[in-house]
Length: 115
Image (cartoon, rainbow, N blue to C red; front, side, top):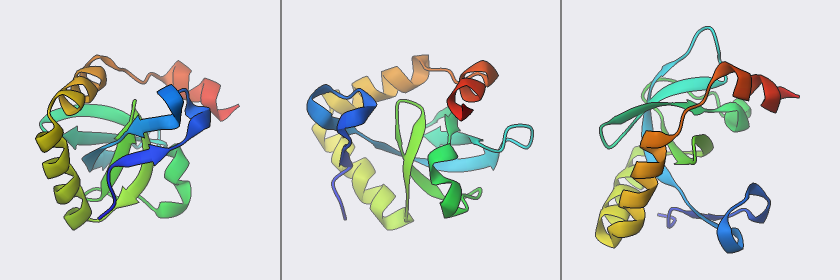
C-alpha cells in the first residue's frame, strides 16, 4: 500500500506534497463525462476525473482525490488502508474533508480546464 501522499510540485501544493483522500465513484455524470459523483467518507461531491481519462473509471471504482481532482485510480484494499491511515493521522484528514465539503466544481470551471 502506498501512503496517500503524492509529490506533484506543479499543482499548487505547499512544498510539493499533497494529501490525497480515497473516494468511491457512485456515478459518471452523463452530461459531463469528465465529472463523477464520488462518496468520500459520507461526503458526496462532484470530482473531476479528467486526469484519469486512460483509466476507464467506472461506478464502484476507488480513486485518490486532492482538492476535487482525481489523481489516480486505486484498488479497494489500498483505499481501505489509506482511509485507516488518514483516520489515524486525524487533523490533516479532517481538514481535507472540510476542504472537500466547501469545494465545488462547476461547468464553467471544467470548460476552462479543457482549454
